[in-house]
Image (tube, rainbow, N blue to C red):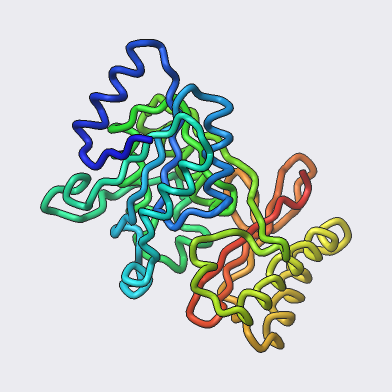
Length: 283
């Protein structure tokens, strides 16, 4: 498996692949790979001839400096996991200078209001950082398809909007959330949880499952109040937000429309570790 750290070298390889009609799938990551990432790579390999996996911890999408400092850096083990897949995978592992030059700053993007909902209310500048790095990586890798997990569903919708607004010729594909045996959505941040926190974090998904059951018979305000009360009494978890929102617009549900699709979104702190999750409610 080839590991490339310079964008010029990567573009040369991709140009050669594309000249022979090879389709390119792309899975952008920040490393600390787990089975959720590997499922995206496997999905990309099923749909494309060759897969590029980027491993880059993007500084411009972290609103919390300590989160950036503590984010796991595990390139060697990440590469080992990808090698075990035995697929046509190429790893792009640049440094910040390679992608940003001397100025590690984010561009400003507008996503027709998607950026102001949920995560946007709590993580200032986050989606500018996401847009900056994804657009640059798309321009470098020139993939036919790019694969993103639905755990970051708001990010997925924003990237779809980004490709549309900037006419980027990439098909963005969302893939189902990969979960641990207790239901906790897989995340690189899970490795920073203590055993006790990890066990208790399963409460997040159990709560979302109950929300899905309640959604058929109760209104959104009552459900939101119930979720808030459930977390108030939890000794290990602190609720940051809970929203029931339109899956397309991400606007908070006020009046349920029979033709609209809705999802429940949640962000919770387990100690110092921030965890997010979501479930589809009526599809």
